Amino acid sequence: MLSKYEKELLVTIWDKMSIRAEDIGSEALLRMFTCFPKTKTYFAHLDISPRSPHLLSHGKRIVLAIAEGAKNIDSLTTTLAPLSALHAYQLRIHPTNFKLLSHCILVTLASHMSDEFTAVAHAATDKFLSAFSAVLAEKYR
Image (cartoon, rainbow, N blue to C red; front, side):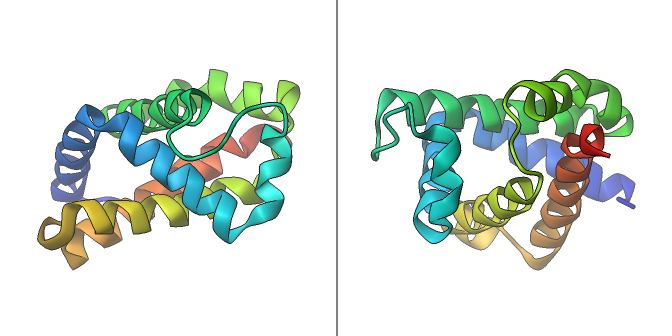
């Protein structure tokens, strides 16, 4: 799936993005809520306005979970098992939303990384986020 170089590249990308986890995560979430308004239904009880504490906090958790997944890509299923169970059994998030958020994360990374987000970085990140989404959706089967 991912080459050794792509795995190393992903760790580098997510290490850099972890420093700005609140900004990257909240921007990706806001982009998803704007482009795909139905995704807001899971957040009806929270303030999801731009730069709100809820949005910043949840965005940060997402980016840090992705960064952790990138570091443990060879054991992604084990690393994400608690998150997969949480989203499937307690939060009951529809798995399609993981793919929508992945797309929004790609766009957000491209806007923040500009020239560093090369075609190789884009492809590696897309493959990784697809795998990440698939693992999160495993408990739904």
